[in-house]
Image 1 (cartoon, helix red, strand yellow):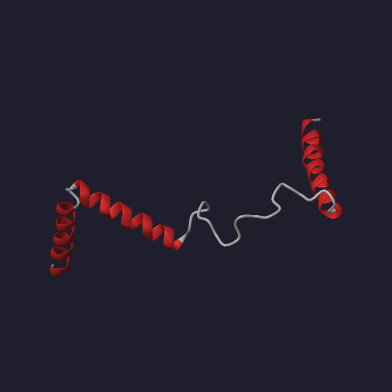
Image 2 (image 1 turned 30 degrees about the vertical axis):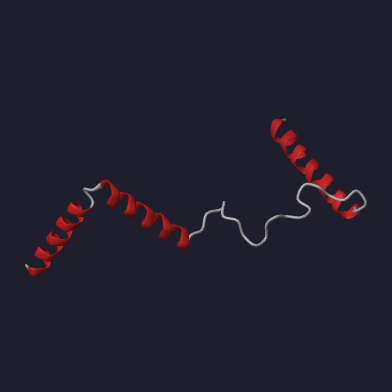
Length: 84
């Protein structure tokens, strides 16, 4: 009985506290911050950024240029096989 009254009291207190728009916004921001701490967004900058060579290989780096050209052909060949 005491437990049920305590739960009802907590629920009533929470509903009264959340009736204010500013308190709802505070709670929403608090939950959003907790979610970011647990699982950071993919848009958060990390230590690996900026990527130095991303999409701009050096013209004399033959191995890198070969890898880039093979990667482009792989996707084109895959698309062509699926289309036919």
